[in-house]
Image (tube, rainbow, N blue to C red; front, side, top):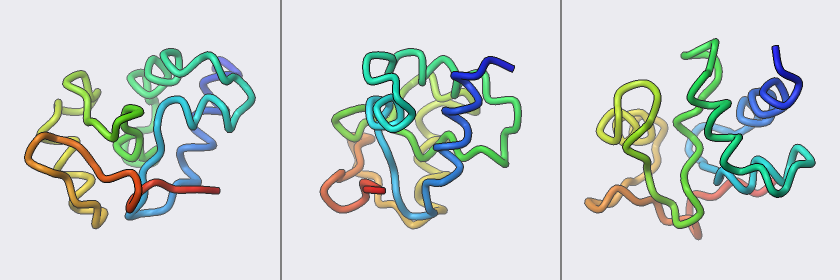
Amino acid sequence: MNKFFEKVYEYVQSVPRGKVVTYGQVARAIGYPHMSRQVGYALHANPREGEIPCHRVVDRFGGLKDAFAFGGKDEHRRRLQADGVEVRSDYTVDLSVYRYMD
């Protein structure tokens, strides 16, 4: 397994239920501040769906992505709501409320 991907998975697993992080936030936290796009690639290739909560990652504006690996925006919203995160009708999350700050 790619070391970068493993770091992404490890960090995302630390995000608690009811919180979200951004792709850029993950990239900075693991020491690769300019690789937020690659964070998305890693999450899309999530080898342990159900164990690695990739649904807790959103874009820098709090937006959910069409390309969510396990079912698109509606599934992304469903999983976040199941975690206790409110998702607005425009498929965004209020980062001032739900962003995880470690």
